[in-house]
Image 1 (cartoon, rainbow, N blue to C red):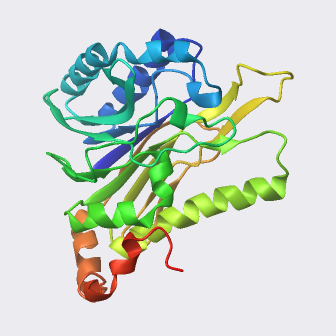
Image 2 (image 1 turned 135 degrees about the horizontal axis):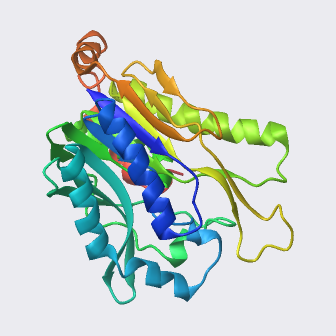
Length: 292
């Protein structure tokens, strides 16, 4: 399976950013990609750095955006994982991953389930938690366990996708540092982010594909040039034993095609039968908020 990771900075407008995305998709398709994965909210800026009702206007084009990206998938003959701002109804919005089959038809949709609320990541203001559950999406490129960004910190989400037959986990992402953070703290954050997702690969014997934004985006409230988020890139692919198949750096634009041996992934499950040895009779407490 040839999977493409597409990552780039915000280019100043939706049109210019989309043109950049299209040029990278074209390159990946020419390199033989069968499955193309885009970063979180790839059409525009990461608008959640402040709480502004005007930003809800960005979701009005959801239906036309779906039509557009379906046409892109069809043009290049690829399965395409997108990340869009969905207006479901006035006052009801989702952070949604929409997956298109290579004929342009929507194969499925996932609405982000875990919603953060941290300084400069004010997503609870914008996004209603998803209500479609953790359901893999069937495509010609396989059964895809698509999750979004903050979901990547939750092993429960990865496990449920695996138990429902996902053949790989895919995380469109927008995560970064504050420029004024100390370097040692930046390293701890980045390494924790990599480690938790590598753990998902190992625990579930599945490849994990994560596509993160790059570049600095100034905050709307910026008082100086350092106010904002420096997206840390480092998009990656881990194999079913947590082996590093690809790792980017923090600033490089990507149209990277990575080949994943899916037959080997199945063999890993035979060698390390974690699913066989689960004690499902003893896990009731995992459904509690806290056990003391």
